[in-house]
Length: 94
Image (cartoon, rainbow, N blue to C red; front, side, top):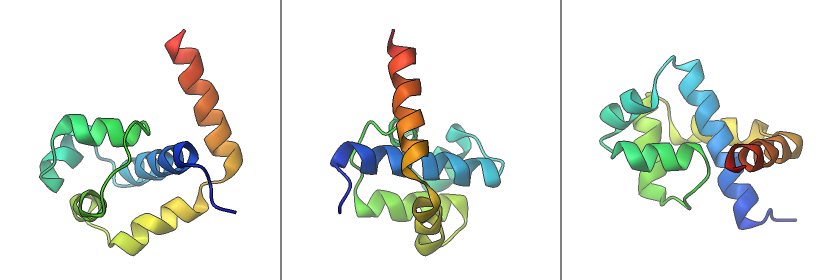
């Protein structure tokens, strides 16, 4: 079954955060190395945008990994992590 759009965005946000942490980068550093605006990288890292394929490619290049490696991070994110991320976002909004 295909995840709903919100879960897909959150799952990608988690995978992006993990890749950034593994590369010991910051969001600003990733924005600079990928040629993307900081706000776009920040919004992708919290699951607020449905990003384009070209953005995914730029993020992977900025992380100095292949797009397939970035999607390996995505594949490792479980539904429990997505649910925890949702709960954390709800708590931060209060």
